[in-house]
Image: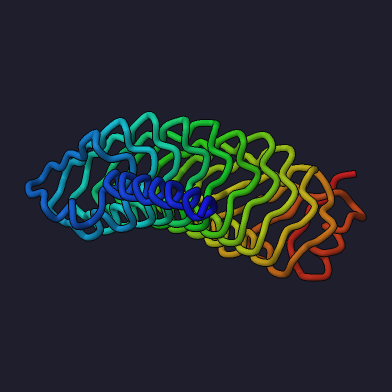
Length: 289
């Protein structure tokens, strides 16, 4: 009897908390009740549910309560007319694909309480010209800015150690990237077909994965820092206007077809691994002692 009596209050309390928490989640049913081109989410809510505004194509402006702490996966996906949203200062997390294909969203500022940008967060935000990333962000997910065709410049947060798969792929207007000092790895096709015209890699970079800068047609000259230990295949392949690649060091691993054979002159130390690689694979090479 005593054990049963002790269990009852615990079960009741859990149900009350669960129901109260459910009422604080703004879901798709709530969003569909609201009409017009501007939608306000009241102070009664602390979370935006998965797909809450998904494919609501008429809304242009969304005002979120300062009480919102979580934005769920694909919360605003396909809001193709959305051009204005201010993220609350208390926001702690933004889900995967939260703003995917918000193709008229031009600018956004990430609050300092958010530590991660998940995969596909801003994928296909084709009108986005600027995004303010603070230095508390530690992770940028796969394809986070894929096809952000209007993005011109980006400052990678200082705590980021890796730029992963296709993060800035097809960012055709992206001219300048500021890399953090402690970045170690640039992932597969991270900047594939981006609009980069200049590239200053950081001095602690170690790995350039396959196709990291594949078909970046605006690049004309690059310097590979001494810290780089591995360059995978096609890292700079298809960069048709890349005339000169200077190696300050001598990477241990060199993949196939890193550069175009007929376009790029490789500058490296005589007798180095890079020198041997170039001569074996028919690359144009200039040596320094």
